[in-house]
Structures are given as structure tokens and as C-alpha cells.
Image (cartoon, rainbow, N blue to C red; front, side, top):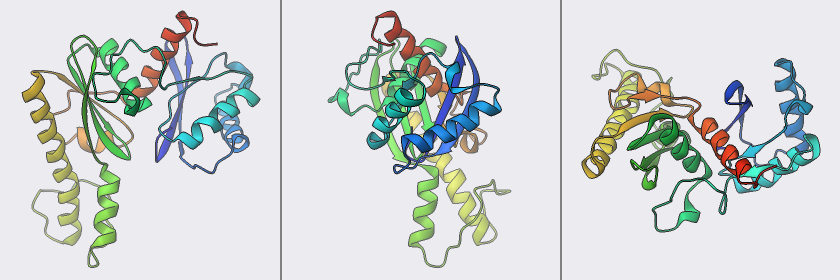
Length: 253
């Protein structure tokens, strides 16, 4: 559950069979989530009874309890919730481990298990996060930048003479009109942000694989060589791995 969108995944063993994306609404109730999820799984020829476990990773605290309530009432399952105290196998080498979001923990374990370390995960969402993982799989910290859509909205809301444009690639970095000027600054400028931060992080930790994920990853990944691998479902895979660790330790249903 992210700040702007939530991504749901249905696994059969280690196989991610289905994914769905919904808008995050802090006011949406457990009953409303049930209607949405029921419609999704029905389209996949599944039912709410098809599931035998649930894990929730949320950066929206009011919705964490709502989702847990949905799982309890409609799936008859006690959800594993990613948060303080969950077993992850990831050492959080930061000043305050409780500040590390569930998405960053999931990204870290998935990146290390699937691609090895050192690694840098660039997650393009409401914010763009840079998660730095050591060779041993430790979360070393990272960086948080305004997301691409937030940057775009800020520009349009604060500049009276600029109008909204599609977030699409202009023909060249040198725009010939207002629309292509804005598109160049947004897209190519954001690529420069990613490239600059990745370069600085590598100067501190040495060579590392860079993995791009998140809902907006495609906009940037195709315009830069700074991202080595695109894994759109990295966070979901991390949640699956976290559930497996906690199941084997007897901490999950």
C-alpha cells in the first residue's frame, strides 16, 4: 500500500500469477476493499477462499489496520504485517530502524536474494527512493527524492504561465515550444537526478547493480543507462520472501 497506489499480487508458491493496481484512498473501508478484491480475483477465476495466507506492506498507517480487518473478515486469515519486529534477515544499518518503510525492507530482501549485492534499488513511486544494499544484504540507507509526478504537479501549480503536458518523450533535449520545453525538463532532467544520485552512491560503496522498480520506472529506465535491471514486481517478491521467512519461523499463519 503506497501513498498514491496499492499493488496486489496473487502467488501460487513462488509464482506470481496475477497483479492488480488500485488508487490509494485512506477513507476506503474494509468492506469497499472486499468489493474491489472480489472483482479482481473473480476475473482471474479465483475466489476469496482461494487464499491461505496474506502479507501486508503499507506506508499508509490508517490503511494498514483496514487491510488487516479486510483479511480477517473476508479471507478468514490473520495477516502478517511488515513492520517493527518482523523477521527479515535484513540488518537495518541506519540511525532509526523504525523509520524504514515496509516497501524498502521488501525491496532490500528481494534485491539481495534475486540479484545479489551490492545493489541499489530505485523505486519510482509517489517519492523516488534509493535503497542501498550491501554485499551481505544489509540495508545501508539511501536517499528520497520527490517523485516524477509530484515534481510535475508542483511545476504546474506554482508556475502560472505553464500548462499541463503529457509525460512523454520529446524529440530532443532542446524544446521548441513550451510543451516540449516542459517535457524535456521533466523527463531528461529527472534522468539527470537519477544518474547523479546513482553516481554519488557508487562513489561511496563501489560498483553495484542498479534495479529499477515502481509504477513510473518505465518512463526513466528507457532513457538512461544508469539502471541495469527493471523488475516491476520487486516489492511483491520481497513481500513473498518476508512471508516465507516468518512462516518458517512460526511467526505467520
